[in-house]
Amino acid sequence: SIHDVDVVSDIVPLQPPPLPAPRDPLVLSFPLSAGAGLPFRCSQAAGGALTHFAHPSTWHACDFDAPVGTPVLAASDGTIAEVRDGCAAGGGADTSLFFAFNSVVQLLPDGTTTLEYVHIRAGSAVVRAGD
Image (cartoon, rainbow, N blue to C red):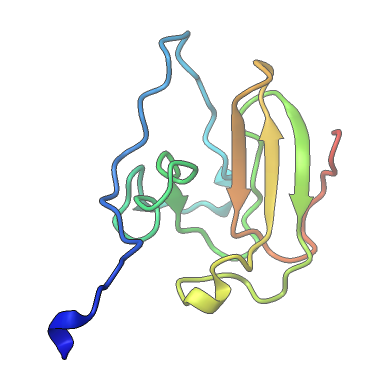
């Protein structure tokens, strides 16, 4: 009978990540070129209900709507740790595309903080790891 079935779930309550240890404030520049002449709408902020709430690595992410081809600029000094720009699928909200994205990962001068620039056009990165 249905009452004899033991159901186990891997669903756990999601909690925001712990706050980082106190340190000097992180000051960043806006990462999109103003050359497009348009304002950039923040389409999802830190802890956003669409995708940023689900994992500590994306909790502090911010998404900005920008026209295709808008140059993405470094928000701080640092070294490029990784470049992924060969994915033509483009990523998106569909679960089949969840890990299909292009990105540039920048390691900041403190040696521990990283910035990840995602949703970039395939083949458009002009930096490489080590830059």
